[in-house]
Amino acid sequence: MANTLKPYLDCISLTLEASMCLRNFPSQLVERHNKAEIEVKESKELSLNPIKICRTEMEKCLIEPSINSVRISIAIKQSDDIESLLTHKFARFLEQRAEQFIILRRKPISDEYDLSFLVTHSHLEEMWKHKLVAFIIRFMEEIDREINGMKIAVNTRARVVAQEYMKAFAR
Image (cartoon, rainbow, N blue to C red; front, top):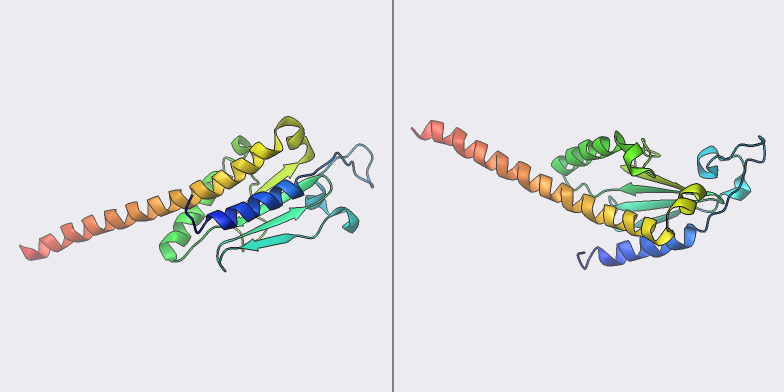
């Protein structure tokens, strides 16, 4: 992990640990319904204040805790058009495979964020909290590294294509 990224990810990790104190809480309106409160927003008193952690204006994380669920939304760094395009395509690729990630949502909460996770009390009954937090942090590290790698590969390929194109004029 890069030294500049470490304080940002540590802050997210500690906040996630604190906000993932979830419990089983059925609906107050419909009997035998147990929905993620952060998604349905039936009662204001069951949702806590959202927490926004920003590294830069473009790279941020929104954590929305409630009594029985937590929604984590991530905005990935996009410093130029290539990174923006790669991030959009990569996020779309992951969202199409959301069932395999279990906690990944198919759509982010708004256009401001690229990916969203939803952790419910049932996820914490099946999985360990510290492992879920570690997965999200590791995911954030890896997606940043993956997009940087793809950007380098695109630039390398563009350089080779430009060199071959210019060789045609040199002859």
